[in-house]
Image 1 (cartoon, rainbow, N blue to C red):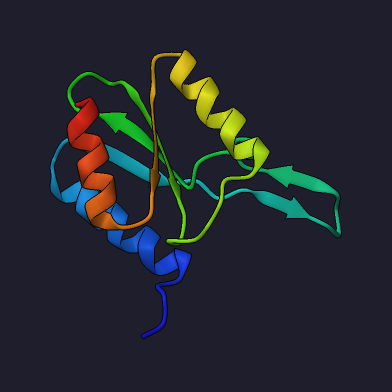
Image 2: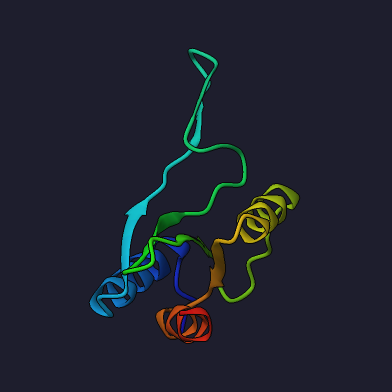
Length: 106
């Protein structure tokens, strides 16, 4: 049995979180257009999913990782910034993982 890919985990996490009715969430793409030298997205290290907790409006960032994936230094810093600002930052390795962490904070 092969480990799930990050994209598969992302789709499962997004669906599970939306199904709770407790979040509004969007995919947050980021990267670099090498040909034009342009960066796009919320910045280096930004979460894969961003959103709001309902009804409070509290910011939510969800970083998706495989079971063995590790956060980069930029991702760690981004998560710390979200938490310092009063937001919620979750590192999810599965839909169940994301739901468990959401239950702890909301």
